[in-house]
Image (cartoon, rainbow, N blue to C red; front, top):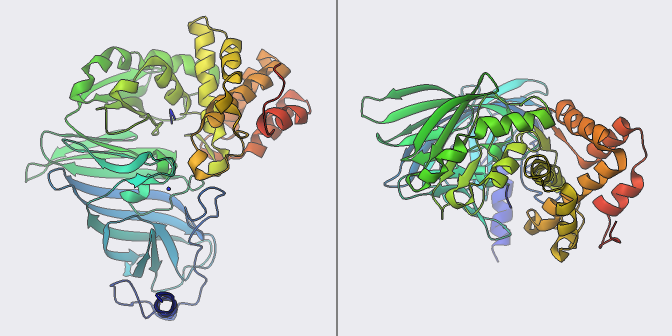
Amino acid sequence: MSQRSRSRALALAAALTALGLLAGGCSDVGGGVRGTPGASGLRDPLFPKLGNGGYDVGHYGLTLAYDPASGRLDGTVEITARATQDLSAFNLDLAGLTVGGATVDGAPAAYNRAGNELTLRPHEEIHEGREFRATVTYTGVPEPLTDADGSKEGWMRTADGAVAVGEPAGSMTWFPGNHHPSDKAAYDLTLTVPAGLEALSNGVRTARRTEADGRVTTVWHTAEPMASYLATVAIGRYATGTGTALGSVPVLTAAAPVAKASAALRAQIPELLARQVKRFGPYPFSATGAIVTEDGTLGYALETQGRPIFPAGSFDRPTLVHEQAHQWFGDSVTPASWRDIWLNEGFATYAEWLYGEEYEHVPASTRFAEAFDQDANWAFPPAAPPTAENLFDPPVYQRGAMVLHQLRGAVGDRVFDEILRGWAAKYRHANATTDDFTAYAESVSGRDLGTLWDVWLYGEGKPPKP
């Protein structure tokens, strides 16, 4: 990213729910279930209620129909997951929207809502290690979330359609799921919209058809694991373009009518991506491209997997380089918790510095000196943003990049390049922590880098200028 006396009654309701007597408007179809409910949150250091415990999702099958005139979204999600414990119930994250029904392995499941938690109680206990399928139908007018820093995310209406982005939690506004970056999955998305509109998402478009009522349906397949915050939808009167990058990777770009001037830079995506591959190693996904929206919908660009999304006014070369670099650092190698976000933003920022050094003749040391002199970059250590409000603050980006520049100076260019490429390869399509990175860098370099980490990655305050 190129940058939230009722107690007695509530207690009774909770007790009734636990006994299977209250199901949020759904009759109780469970019987004799004995397991342990999955946790309603994963205790992320910055978002403790985000995500859910007790299962691991392997695949999301989403079927969506959207009416821009009313703002209504009708959806069905089929989640294929594996239980990581004996489950009597499990949770999904869902904000707003009305649930119409739920099944687990084809049998009706009881469900109830509490805030952004949707609890499903299957008819029979799900045993640890068993794969299961949960299906939820839902409808409503999605509303965006306002983050702790005041920015908007989630499903956002536009003049002729909608845009959906999800960092860090907005995907729960348009589909139920396990919305924590540690639970990545493959996706298939079927999206139906009125005729005359384009509907875009991640991955490869595998089908496009006109329905009997004149609406148009597109089908999108994302084979590689994706954190839900990287899922996207864009609906509107977009002009699209296609091509090929890296010899065989399909390129699909889309631009809102006000973004016609973006055509020249969109055409450079294959060239810029090839330069990134030289630095970071094989491209990790089966499709690439960009979506350029009208200004005023998003206040930021976002590295949505395979097809980053940009406001028209922010679609420039440095931002494109930044979001492309995220395909390796953030999208493929995804942080295990939101506290590790510098592994996304520090790396993508340093990718801008590397690009400027190699192709624009601006040494990374110049960018480092500029960042060092900015007081905002020293508010907190990059590996320890103190609150959710600080998730996208300058230290995560600029001081995160400074950490990498110091590492480069300590180990030399050859070893530093080996660390970048090896890191992207070792944790390809996986999750990683800051400790994973520091251990990896020390392993590859053969050096104890503890002092570097203590000062630049974890240190409080500004050190002497090197």
